[in-house]
Length: 252
Ligand SMILES: C[S@@+](CC[C@H](N)C(=O)[O-])C[C@H]1O[C@@H](n2cnc3c(N)ncnc32)[C@H](O)[C@@H]1O
Image (tube, rainbow, N blue to C red):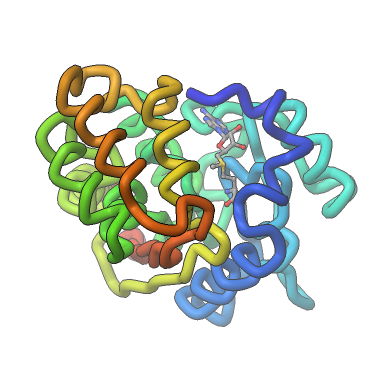
């Protein structure tokens, strides 16, 4: 996983900044029940989305593993941010109405992501709400246009399925007593990248599947180099969210 302590100072500027955060927060808010009074944003990062989830009568907290990210989040939500691991949440059972996880599960391996979902289910009250992004990397490569049309077949041949795949998350959550009750989406404003950006990342080791692609990667980078407008960003991806609702009352 990326070193988020080192990434912290440039995170907002390189992930679409306020525009992306506003879109993500709007999509989350649209799926949150109106009576959400206690909300935990897990893997809150710099808090750029978290801060937009506040409203009168709602207590919002953020938790992140990276002290660098949490430090910035703390400037946005003083006293409301904790350093913590989503696989061992520092929260009591059934203590929140809603858990939010934006761009987290795809970063985790199979066992850690399953534990994160188990922890989310543990801290939710009966009838509570879990909102999570799903299929994050699929969205990146389904954005349309010449760049992703070249990359996607190579990725599909070499990449493992995402740990945030909708089917997987839905199955795991189902075993924890959570049912899908709604879907949402938000544009990844500023996340569409240029051919040159992709060539540099793909050949620079930023993607494990690209490392495994061997000659296919070499050929892909050559084809990317032949595209016009090497520095023009291509279409932004559209990211997807699901809402999962915990059983009301009774055990899991
Ligand atoms: C892509 S960022 C997303 C941040 C934020 N949700 C947003 O949308 O801007 C992923 C975040 O997950 C955090 N993270 C990764 N693994 C974690 C874990 N096990 N527990 C808590 N946070 C974690 C990272 O430190 C990073 O801040």
